[in-house]
Amino acid sequence: MPFQATVLSLQPPPATHAEAAFSRLHADILSGTLKPGDRMHIGRLQKTYRVGATPLREALSKLTSLDLVTAQGQRGFRVAPVSVENLIDVTRMRAMLEIAALRLALASGDRDWEAAIVAAEHRLRGCPKLDGKRIAAQWYVCNRAFHDALVAAAKSPQLIAFRSKIHDFSDRYQRLAGQAGFPGRDIDAEHSEIMKRALRRDVDGIAVLIVEHFVTTAHDILSRNLWTLRDARRTADELRRSIYLAASLKRSGPAANGRTRKLKA
Image (tube, rainbow, N blue to C red; front, side, top):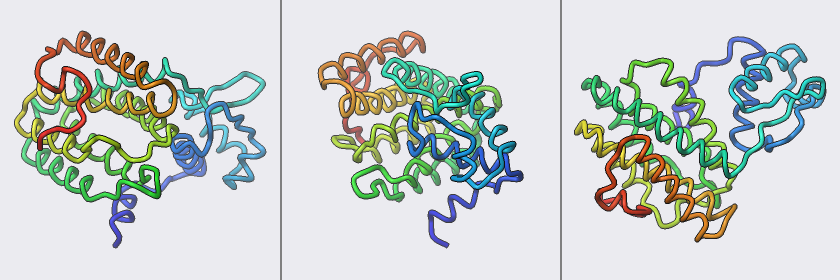
């Protein structure tokens, strides 16, 4: 069985029409097929997704609860907007939630948890990174599986649920930005070093790497699509400082002194 089919087959099939509609709409919002601000007209959605009005409304209500769709009273639904301010807030909250989950996971993870991290990193390293000039859709699947494996031992369903929601927001920004690969970054080395810190139960070390990993991605999005390089660097530095302060991390070593492009594997 091809690798892509193997990974996607791990997702259970939707049980109802509403769940199927939710899954398809959710995927199309995250991928950018449905653009920020697009009106989600029930009639058009019925034709596009070949599902009835009632399941669609159920799906849209669930997407509204996840802040991926906005309800506008009698005017219906729209795809949630995006903004620079929201990207910064999403990145900050993603880092904070990831660090909290990692601290729990590193304290309680067992050998099976360690083996799952190693396997996920191995799959991610071998996953195709590009589809033409854009990051491949399958890479997002493998990347998410790796980060999920890191926190799988956290044993906090509420924390993991909030973290998953923020991860969706982050993925959406990265896909909307139309990133063409990872210029100047050794993304495999970044993930490898994160894995090694997890296996060593290095709580502070992995927290620093996670902050740099996420802030660097936010910087890439800002510099490529929204602002000048100078403004993007300044904003990323301010974001980094705010996360270090909130997470009580010490700014020491090369990873904390600015943008990390390549990490020693």
